[in-house]
Length: 141
Ligand code: AMP
Ligand code: ZN
Image 1 (cartoon, rainbow, N blue to C red):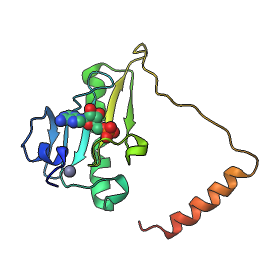
Image 2 (cartoon, rainbow, N blue to C red):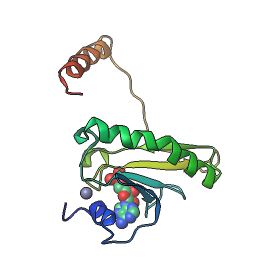
Image 3 (cartoon, protein in one colour):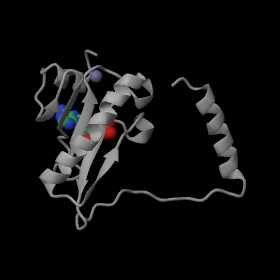
Image 4 (cartoon, rainbow, N blue to C red):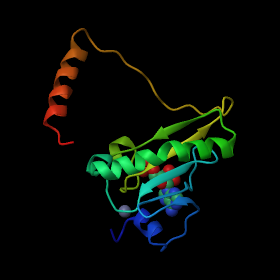
C-alpha cells in the first residue's frame, strides 16, 4: 500500500528500529511507547485488520508472539506484559496495517488502562451469546 507507513517501514523507505524479521513478518520498536521496550509485530504483507488475515498469516504471527514477548520481558526485566491489538479508529487503530503491541509491564510502573467493566441486565448476556455463536457458525474460518 503506497501510503501505508508500516508498508514503508517494511520496504525500508522510512527508518525503523528492528528487533526481529523473517520473510513474512517484522517486529520493531514503537516510537511512542506506552512503556519503554514497547514492540510492534506486523505481517510484511498489507492487511488492515485482524479480520482481514488469512488463517495461515494469523497463525504465522501468533506463533511468533510468545517468543517475542519472552524477549521483551527478558530485556525489560518486566513482571508481565500486555498484548494489544486495535481494529478501526473507534478501537484506537491509528495505523491501518494490522499490528500487535507487546508492552512490557512492571509491578510499579504506575500505568493503568482506562478499563471500566459494566454489567449485563438479566438475560442480556445469553442474548449476546446466541447472536455471536450463530455468527461464528456463519463466519468463514
Ligand atoms: P495503534 O494506535 O494501535 O494503531 O498503534 C499504532 C502504533 O504505531 C502507535 O503506538 C505508534 O506509536 C506507532 N507508530 C506510528 N508510526 C511509527 C513509526 N514510524 N515507527 C514505529 N512506530 C510507529
Ligand atoms: Zn501497510
